[in-house]
Amino acid sequence: GAGVSQSPRYKVAKRGQDVALRCDPISGHVSLFWYQQALGQGPEFLTYFQNEAQLDKSGLPSDRFFAERPEGSVSTLKIQRTQQEDSAVYLCASSPWTVSGNTIYFGEGSWLTVV
Amino acid sequence: AQSVAQPEDQVNVAEGNPLTVKCTYSVSGNPYLFWYVQYPNRGLQFLLKYITGDNLVKGSYGFEAEFNKSQTSFHLKKPSALVSDSALYFCAVRDLIRNQGGKLIFGQGTELSVKP
Image (cartoon, rainbow over all chains, first blue to last red; front, side, top):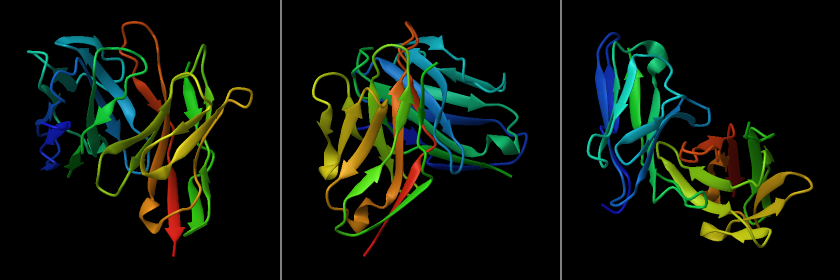
């Protein structure tokens, strides 16, 4: 597609439920990022993939958070046993080959509410 | 560690007046700086970036930003604000630690409100 596509756009989960958020990056983009944005805050880095390799997962807040990109294209962010503090917008972003000057393009986000 | 600061939570401007949204940065080495805009219930849209070269960078929707190395600033500007410019604006710096993809580090955001 023309841009980064994320689904679902909106998700309401009961506390303790597992959720999976999908990201379809711009075709051909090697780099893929996940960010978490709490209400009224700037996005916070979660994890980074170069093709299928997860090179940085330093931002994942707990072992309940897991991300994968098995074929180097679509990525899934999974949150197990959701808690209320997981309520946030989850943004996926992609960019071409890892050159520092490249622009990083964001999707519309997946809005997660844990009740 | 790389970081950016946006000292103003909110900026109010009258339509037609010039606007400035402030950003200062702290980096080791040369900074790669970006501005993004976020409309309500939307993702981030890229506005402009400074990588190297001319200190005045022009971007989308008539926005521009001036890189000032001595003041470590990268303020976003527009000569004449529109009501439709009302949104949340984020400054970001690229973290260039090797093999970590150059993730963006964001400021806390500035809410711009343009009144008719």
